[in-house]
Image (cartoon, rainbow, N blue to C red; front, side):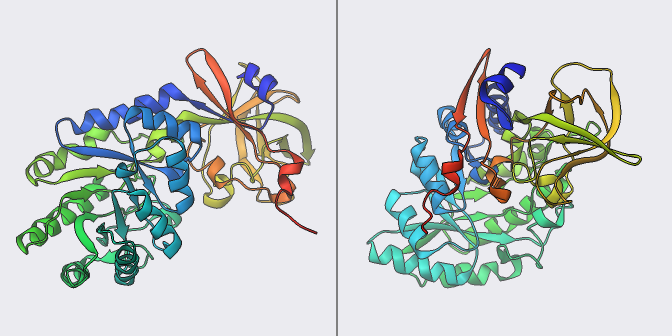
Length: 396
């Protein structure tokens, strides 16, 4: 990590190719003989080098924008293994996705079906869709990343699903080929996901009895990772085992959309200590990374372990903060941190998901570089932005 800091500078996101491969294969192994496609949720980390690695593993992709579709296609993805989710797809995005021949759309409202039908008809295409069903199951996670209750904007209430599927038969240019569900993110207990999946399996059986030619079941994603030492990340088999017999017997191919659980533990944010200061009894470690690089602590009050790059027994209780002019620009408060001398490198762990993708140029700070480590080698996979990049496209 020290070599990366010196060679690539800081702040820099550092990813492990081995960790990404292992996490993907864990899902593949857990499904066993059940027909399945692992559609990586691009919103977790959309860096081309990460996407390309997953393409090479045979992954499909879950996208939520036209820009994400452009990225996965640039990375070499098979469009026939891409599903398009999201509550607010624009007509332009839908047309773009149809023209590229994606697998299907996870539709989140009845009005979206009408737009999809109109565009597919204009292009003389038949669009495949699944309704994203809201099963009214509490994901027991942070409210900002919980999506499965009736109070949330996502999906169609499960009690309305039969009627919407029935009315969808009146459209000429779309066909219902699946049923989809996603209730939230960063779930350490898989029980809510199992509960939601059982509801969706029951609904799928009913719809098939009613003559709908369903082909696939999309279980979404949401399994969490261990951000803190005491956290226990759920085992993929632990999630699937209660459903295995039903999934094998339902006759439907299974799609799953993991994101964080594939890339989260694979990434760190490398940063350098700039200053130490005291305000009375309060001790501050000021680093060159900031909330514009990794906003999760400020946005979600999330915990990231802070590790010294060089082993140190020098422990101090500090706030670790960045240079941005906001009191919310912190990575830890009152944390016991080792090795925090000026010039030391520190690594913020578990930053592979919702790190760079949520970064910004706030305070006119260039966005960080990104590095991929594979075995003993590392390479820069995204150059650090320059000051010129900050004003690219602007006009006076």
